Every structure is written in structure tokens, then in C-alpha cells.
Image 1 (spheres, rainbow, N blue to C red):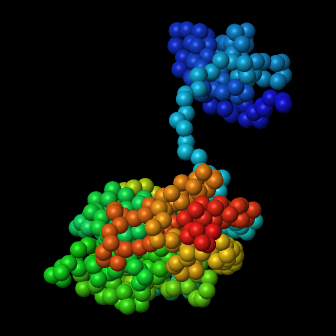
Image 2 (tube, one colour):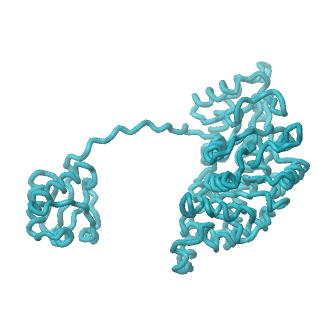
Length: 483
């Protein structure tokens, strides 16, 4: 294989930070170049500036640079050819490689919850949207913009969310962030600055989100989860005093159990928030992906003044898009924007402009429909496998999203199932891994042993091997008569 050379047209434009002695420029230039190679700042194959260009940059004679290049070439640090230039030699001795700590690698088969397969990302449509967005963008859109995000995207999101999710908002109240955790941190910090001290979360959920809330200064307490979703009746103590100032819920499709918040509890929750002045954060992470009927609408529509709606492109498109959005109540908006300014700017304008065009061209709707069809088929394959090969087990939760709970036969050790799955190269987690604290047999928390099966992550060719590995891991837990 031939050596890779830098583009010759860039050789004169390469900037080098070299410190020279005013009394011994030739020797100090040699030492500076040699040190840069040893420290790895000039890597093998890097083409150096022409002697005339570097001499002008450093304010020394051209001959001084030419002599330094010749000396280092003689020592083996550089290579030079007449008419071809000078570059760092591949045989030059650079810095010893620092030991790299081992990085935990994912197993080849992945059934973790809430993880999408990025191979389905609509690259062509996204590239077309990016080209149109950049062509049409005014120069002002590429400058320092509104901390809430690019107006074109906020406008497109307000229209889409109202149409597709029933969210009641407008362009002024939409805030674009780097992801859901970023939005959650902004809202939590804003609420703490306003005096909030305690947040209630569902008994099952993302540990990372609980960590974000705690890092913002909120004490985290939990709400039991049952077939009706989070038990919002537990938000008051026996004397009727509120136990929390903030509530974080996944009402359309509870993560990871898959149950929706019941209509009665939805009404009770917004009534409680209005009575107490508390804020509800609605994490609508996969609300568009309902497979058996129309999706459950946004909770925010019941009380836009007390509910922060949060959505993301991670499930319908890919996590790599790196964008999330919130519809923020007017009373909280200025505080959230203030936190945005404190913690840094909004996501890059080019990505936001691209998503705005993607939404305006209805490519996002098409991506959602493709994701629905793809994941519906995967869930149906999982359901067929459970029915045929795993008697005594059952799937629970709405037919929606990217995961489902697989209840195991009573008495099964779910950790043993997970360990058997790991030996077969399968990433799988028990339901207990998502619990906020120990699971107690009261308050609706009693449950059968279960694992959470995410069917979104495998590539298409990996779905059947992953489901086969799942069945093999569960089989030893089945009653002997059914094996």
C-alpha cells in the first residue's frame, strides 16, 4: 500500500506553532520541529510548508528553514525530494502510545430497550434536505442565533407537534436542545432556581435521567407503576400535602413497561399540577410509534401552562441527529432560556435547518411511517416466537415503541436468564435493572419476574438470531412439561 500524502495545494497554508530563539533561530527551529514530531503534533506523512512559506511565517531567512529541513532529513525525521516537498518521515520515532483503557464492547446481538437501528436512517432524503436548507439559508442563520434554536425549526416543530401529537404551543415557546437529557437539565435547573426541591419519577425508567435531575439539585422520589401507569395518587401525602414540586413521566408509553397513563390518572395529574403549581415534564420519547391504533395524544394538551412537552428525533430518525425539543410553559420559558445561556449554546444551526426542511417536506412523517411498519413487523415476530416457543411467558404493554416486557414463569431468576443470554452473545436487561431503588411488594409494585426486550436495535439480518438467542436463554426457566 502506498503512503498517503497531504494535498500539495495545502502545503503552503499549513500553520505550525513553533517557538524559536531570537539568537539561535536555526538550532531552535530544528529542536522545535523534532519536538513536534516526538510529541505527536506532527504525525507521519504530514507535508510541511515550503521553506519560503515557513520562513515568511516565522520571520527568518529562507535558508534557515532549508538548512533545518536538510538536517532533520539527514537524521531521518523528515523526507525531502526535489520538486516534491518535505514531509514527516514514516520511520520517524513518535511518542509511545499511551495505554488505552479497555472500553466495554457491546455483544453482537442487542435487545436493549429503547435503542433504534441507525441503518434505517433516510440518508438520501436527509442529504437532499441539507442541501436545500443550506442553499436557502440567509447569512444571518449561520451567525449567533436565538438560544431557543433556529426559528425555522421551531416554527416547523410547532406545526408538526400540533398536527401529529396534539401539542398546544407556538414558535415562541419551542426550545431546541442537544437531546432529551439536555432539555431535562435545563428545565430542572430552571425549576431549582425557582425554588423546586423534589421531583417524582416513575418507579421504572432511565437511571441516567434520574442522575440528571439529581445533578440539578432535586431530590428524587418514586411513584409506583401498575397497569394504569404511574400512580399519581401518591403525589400527595396522607394529609393532602404535595410530595413533589416536579414530576417526570412517560405517559403515552411508560418506559420500559409499555403501559399508558390511564385517562383518569391523566385528568388527576393535571388537576394536581394546577392545584399545587407543580410542573410536569412529559417525555414523549416514542409517542408516534403506536402499532394497533391511533397514538395516545400528548398530555400537554390538557394543561399547557403546567406541562413541559419533550420530544426527540432519536427514535423516528436516529440518535446521531442529536436534536430534541420542548414546548415550555410561558411562566418557565425565560428561566429555561437563561439556563441555556449559562450552559452553552443551542445545537448547530446547520442540523436545525436541515431538520426544519425535513419536516416542511413531510420527510419526517414518511420516516415515522417507515419506522412504524418496520418495528410493528419485528414486534409481531417476537409475539409469534413467544406463542410458539415460550409457553408460560407473556408480553405485556402497549403494541408501541421499541421494547416490550416479557414476563417469565413465576419463580424464575431473571438475572439467570440475562446471564444465559450474555453467554449467547445477547445484550438483555431484566426489568429490575430499570427500577429506581428496590422493588417492594406494595403500592402496585408487585410483579412477576421479567426481562425487557428491545426489538429496535438489531439490524434486519440480526433479528431472527437475536430472537432465537432470547428463546434459548428463557427455555430453561419453562415448566418441564412444556419444554
